[in-house]
Image (cartoon, rainbow, N blue to C red; front, side):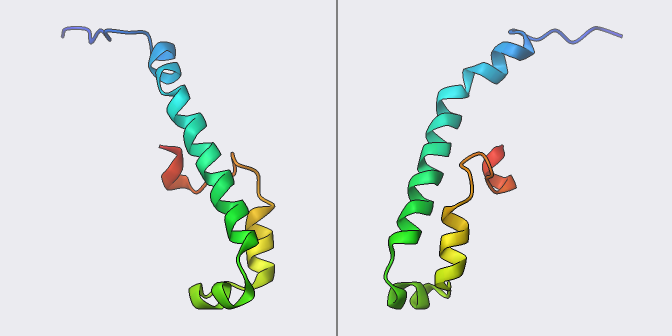
Length: 70
């Protein structure tokens, strides 16, 4: 049975997406801070309480939803 060889080492594959991952984390942090700055009537429009918005904004950027982690 032939051996599968990768064109690049696995470490290089992981590091090649690093700028994209950093950009995603920055976007998540900006989005969370924007959520915390919304007025109460806008939060009601999207079905989020002030406490939920503050809790979400206080999460760290690397505490991302699993579908963002890739």
